[in-house]
Length: 174
Image (cartoon, rainbow, N blue to C red; front, side, top):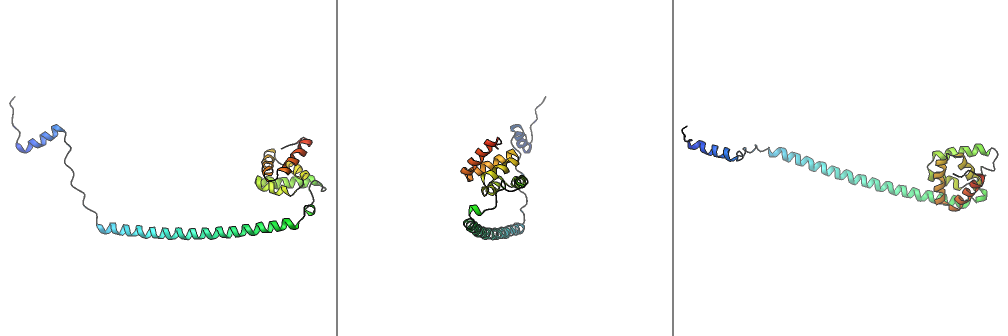
């Protein structure tokens, strides 16, 4: 076999193929029109300004609503405190346990308390005597009564202890 010489213009391509050199870089992509980019940037800036304006407006509304809620809360607390002072404990509504048909009334209050959250139910029961609270808790689902009793314990531990003692004497603790 005879060796032939490669022409000079093919030698560089053959050497690069043997060396596994990367191919030459592709020509750069044609540049995008600058006007399209400037328009997109302007729209983004306008959107950013609009979003910032909306955020400030929402923050101002939220702050105003918080102030209104705080005003209402202090007003309600003042009214509750005033109502608490004006009604003596002996002048409160008669106890469910002492009322005729108290079983029916206790069941109605137990149903109402079961639909409320444990904390709200405990606040409702704080105004009742220990016998009434025990009667109402006996009418409730034991799990719900336990949750209400736990909230009552944190709110008025003395009442909770007396109610628990009364229910244990009667053999039906929550």
